[in-house]
Amino acid sequence: MEQALAADDARVQKRAEQSIHVMQLAGRTYDEQRGRCDWELVARDMGMSLIGCLRLFDPSVSTVPVRSLPNITDWLAEDISTLKSAVSEKFGVVTADEWRLIGVYMNIEQPDCFMAHNICTFSRMTPDMYKAITRHKNDGLKWKDIFELYPIPNSVHVLRDAYHRFKKRDDSKPKTLPMKWSDADTRLLKELVQTYDKPGNRHELLTRAQAAFPNRSQKSILDKSRQIISKPQVITNDAMDRVNKLVDAYGKDWARIGQEIDVSPRRAQRIWTLHQERQKVTLTWTENELDILRKCIHDGVGMAEASRRIGTKTQFGCYFKEQSLKRAMANNTLQKSKTPWNADDVARLLHLVSTYKRGEIDWTAIGKDIGRTVSSCKTKHGELQRNRINSMDNHSQAVSHEVQKQYEQQQSVDWAKIAQQLDLSERECLEANQFNDGKIRWIYHPDEFSWDMANRMTTFIKDNYPKPLPVNYTAVSNYMWIGMSDCVKMASLLRGEMNYENKA
Image (tube, rainbow, N blue to C red; front, side):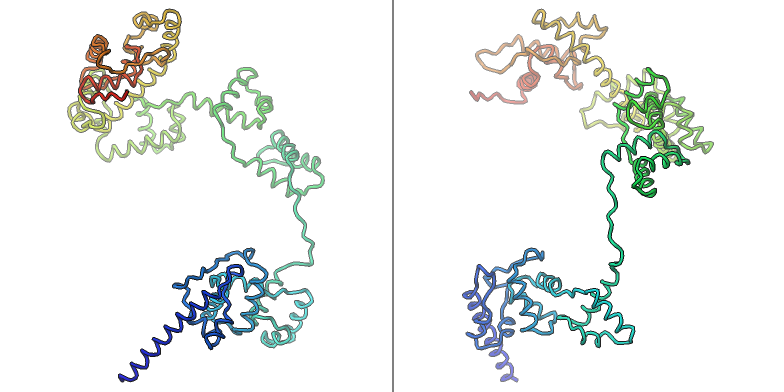
């Protein structure tokens, strides 16, 4: 037993030494221009067979770079010729392991070699060969007998696959490509569709289209017409505004309006209808609207009909509100939500929210204090915030215009006068103004610092934004007529939240 183990160890050691020697010779015979080693010279120097040397070669530890040629167009003619001769002369019938050796011989990854060989040795079936093989099959010959008459380099399977592939081709019929629709023809057909298309009756459209395109088949015209009709078209706000103006000018003459905007009369009417629907839609729900929706839910009325009854909500808006009401019913919170908000509740909500920092609001505590659900409080607060922002947006342009006019005339701004002209408070004007030309810089310097300006800013903040209200630095910047970033930095410096660093 010990002698047998010793013999095995010696054989393994010898094989390892031979493997190292083979890889060294392969590295020395590697030709960078050809991209592979001279394996015939390696086999001769080793005194072994070519396949034996290839089996000893380990690409994972070799310094010879392996090529990757995944596309047949990456292969050179010399590589293809070498691959075909190696498979036919050196390996004969190729097994899976021998494909690995072929990859080593070619210095190309194994799957790439397999792919290239299959493509290059694929049998080309001719019509004469196809007819002869068909005749032999009808005579009862088997594929292996036919293969002896028409030998293919690979196997009988390649011949059989080539035959069946050729069988699917229809060489008897000439291949004609369909006529493509030019841009001019498409525009002409589109005009005909817009003018003569009638749902359920396209006889007139087809008659006129065939007269306009005598060289095209009826199927081609119908297919192209369906493509034009079914092509999705996004209705933009500009299109709705344009149709609305044309309706004011021409009335509901949809044929004329469709001609003006290059659409069908039916689509022009659809654009106008959508515009009217959007004009009526509101975002917030009133108690009257909620009552109508609840009645629709109770009566089993669909949301499309509910949208029509309410008049100011879309079908999707009714659907989402329906889901919200059903969840409220499931959580037994419907009775609390039905109580309308009064002015005292709104004032109490705003006061309680102002006592918290942004992002740290305890909605549960606020809901208990007011006697409403968390969802109701959040919804109402969001509605109030949106109304405030919308109100500020509406005033911003008018305030900015008045500020600009005053500043250009007298290089100063009288906020009391602007507030009186626009019927707003001074604070609302300060928060709404977006005109910033001429604002000065305020950079801290120990020798030039003005405590009068600092006290003026601090007093304004304390009077208008007492804690815990967040400071609106747009208003502070407009009041001081100093850049907002400098106001923020100076306020932080005065509160001791940052230290001055003289970077000059």
